[in-house]
Image (cartoon, rainbow, N blue to C red; front, side, top):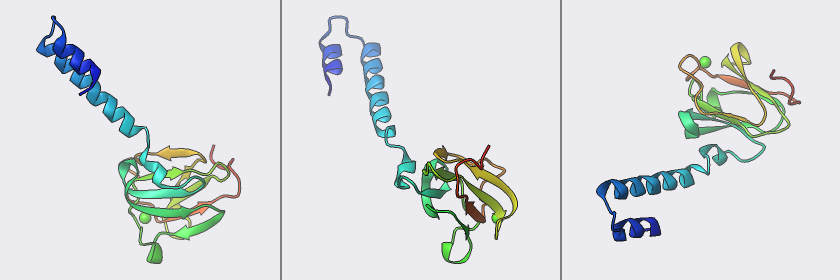
Length: 139
Ligand SMILES: [Ca+2]
């Protein structure tokens, strides 16, 4: 119990409404503190990652941290699963593709950007990726 709650309880003007607003503020405060460590930080700085669920949770795919290409089939075992991503590199833009071998419709993943929800159209479509050698490929 924090001091605000003790104060509300001891106040001559104590009301249930006052107590509930203090409790609500405490709850919101606790939520804000928890949210201060975003889930995408499970993907280390300089890495690019995708997750099977929105808000950077669920199964995580390490897309990479250096220029190159990857298919999400086979060993990666992440085909048509991605729902969120984070590009924690400040040096490399990246792109994901609907099909393997960097084919089909595609979307950029700007350096130093996180996307909590890829959207209903793009959800669980990504099948391959490319990491560029510079950070100016996404407009
Ligand atoms: Ca696909």
